[in-house]
Length: 396
Ligand code: SAH
Image 1 (cartoon, helix red, strand yellow):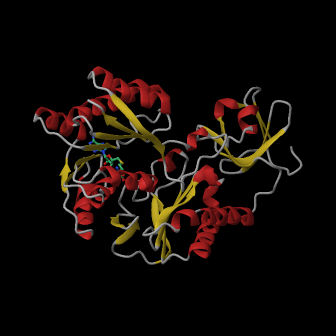
Image 2: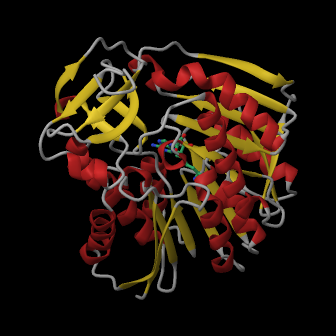
Image 3: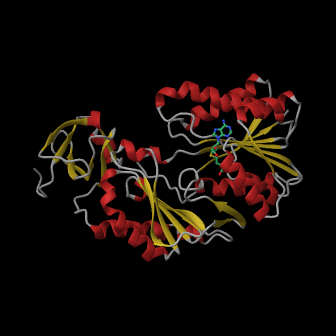
């Protein structure tokens, strides 16, 4: 037992390096042995094979990520420490919240805010909180109170309705913890209005990681014919309209999402053709019909949640890139995304560029972007950089 009387997890030789570099996870197969009585969700001390202190975190035998570290230095884990982390997280987001016409951002981004498994998104006056790691469950009220104190929202909704919770040994539910949930939640992102479904939508209701890429799109859209594939509730499409597009089409497979694209077009007085379809089929049909666009956006869901499916994922990214390029004449712009951590940036870029090669088309890279800065990347924890955003121009 260590001085603080916590059970001790000994990590196998070779895995101390990543922990020293700041990685916050210990996988089950990295544990050599456990000393003391351990219960799921309880605090443990982690030491390396020589017994050197590596950190303190939560243990959960049901999760592949068996220990999630809260600290790499010897400090006691208290309510005050958790509340201070929440405050620091909110303080950092002032950078984003001072953007003109923006009232929404990610306030807590899990491990990158040293609050493992905790997500909090601010949607205007509503904060949506998710707790996805068993060890953090008991701090839910502490986190909620700190969020309310820092941000003074009209409503705080605990949306613990994510399948990951079942894997972690928890139940799924949603509950209003503060204030009352308005009938409709309308957010502002760089001056664009968006109705967001915080109860029944995907993830917390909206993908705040794309804010800055949405804005970036505008400059390519003057008088353009724009196609937004995997549009969700129309983030890129609405910004294309703002950028002066002459015609915008948004496609998503979810009927709920397409209904919100229509609502959002109306809220902004924008003309958008909202189509409910499978983008793989839709793109193929557009190619067959000989359609042409000036700008195409591809933003599919994660094709792979595990490293093992990489080859399949690459095929998926390549197929939609091939179709999109066929729709783009010389001068056309393609913005293509991967939101899967398991797809490394270089593999993704090479996959998309290989589509151009197959078509004997020359392209140039305009830029390679990532998730917005309210989703910062924790040093030593590459998993926190997941969104790749590759912008290309067709040269011929
Ligand atoms: N571009 C959006 C986020 C997209 S998330 C934004 O900027 O906010 C991915 C979207 O792809 C989800 O809305 C999901 O419903 C949709 N989707 C998943 N599979 C699809 C498919 N085969 N065809 C069309 N849409 C799909």
